[in-house]
Image (cartoon, rainbow, N blue to C red; front, side, top):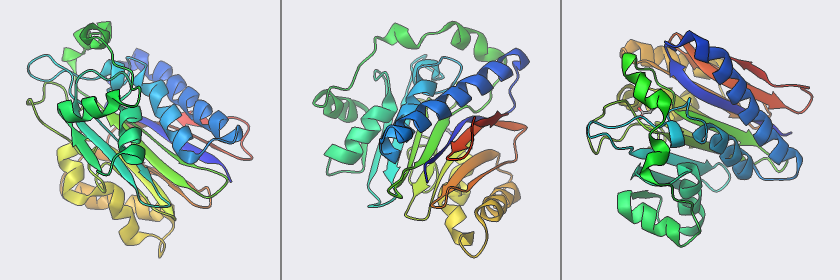
Length: 282
Ligand code: GLY
């Protein structure tokens, strides 16, 4: 079974005219990842390819569209996790990398460490041909207009390939106007992402809230004694109990999708074998 689920952030999308465009881009990201799977690529190839589409689009808070911190700089975080061997690559506080999810992948695959930050992470990436972007690449028209409203739009994907590998990938610019050095849930295993040999999950929303309940890993407290859908629902209920606001997507080894959020909406798209086109909505 080949399957992929992608999200483009949970929150209150204030710019209503952007909603249909963002749904379309999330759909394209799921198709990109699914195309990789159909061509024989691994779940890691697929999840990273899907996240790159969203990082390259300035409508999402990751890569090119990353929010600026209080000093007007981007500080990006990303992670990738392989559900078969539980290997992890996470990065935080990245300023100049075009696709942070690719840097997270090389940390997972080429480094003896799980988590690298800032300059050390960027230096590590140089050895593996990671593409760097000039600072003006991140100063987009949307970013200049965005001060009118804040909404979480971290991006993420979980893919399942024919071999049964589940990979989770996540990327974010964090929260708007954040303190320099602030790191959210996204690069933290268990909070922003998790994958093992039975399911994968990626969270989105207010990182400070997500960490309180370790939202992505939390699903494993309920699964498999509950369905994936019920496990996601219970995890979001736990988040609500601590007044947290977020969403989560999940995918299990049988290709079942689940998602939940207690925000106004969450951009998401998913496709698997047997579906002609992705389901995509906010
Ligand atoms: N969920 C992304 C962040 O809070 O940084």
